[in-house]
Structure formats: structure tokens, C-alpha cells
Length: 144
Image (cartoon, rainbow, N blue to C red; front, side, top):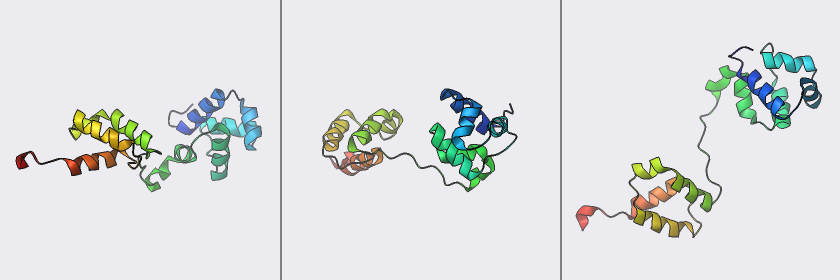
């Protein structure tokens, strides 16, 4: 298999992970088994509609699959945004797990305690918002 054919590699790996033969996958996505073989070996590229059906069948991200199938289109894709936590609890956990961020902003244990109390209110929705709050409430040491 061509090492540049990442789409084909991912397709084959995911098909096998779902314990499907090429024939079974082909039946589910509405093509011939030989077409699945051509896709896996990089001899053909899938259409946009076929990418959608493959993604749905194998539970893959459509955008990622599209870029794998058509790497030349990557430059036309918007830059990926970091995933935003869905809840205040997730935001709190994300902040605690990001040691590099905590170190870069030199967040103290005392500040973490205050932020933990604040997280229980449920208003803060991202680690960056926690850091903004720390920055706002910090006193200038020269003022004391």
C-alpha cells in the first residue's frame, strides 16, 4: 500500500476494527467491493457523498476523512479551534490538567482554592476564563 495513502490506511484499519470485509462495507455504503479495494490501495479517491457515507458507517469525523482523501484541500480549511469544555466542571478539570498553563501563569495553590470555589458557581466555562479572573484579582506586590 502506498505510504502516502493515509485515507486508504485509515479506511482499512477502521473497516477491520468494525470487523467488516470489503464486501460488507461496500454493501453498507452502496458501492462495489472492488471500489473499496481501490480506495484502500489509493487507486481511486472517494466523492464527497461517499466520504459522508463512509464516515457515518465507520463512525469517523467527516472533515478529517475529507482531508485524508484530499490533502491538497487542507490549505482551504479553517484552522482548528481548541475544543471548548461543555460544562463548568469540564472547564475546571481542563484547567487542573493543564500544568503547562498553570505554570506559565504561575497560579498559586491559594488562587486555585479560590478558583475552585468560583467553579462551583457554574459561570466559568473555560480554563482561559479562570486565568482571566486570576489576572484581574491579583494584586500588584508593590502596592502592599
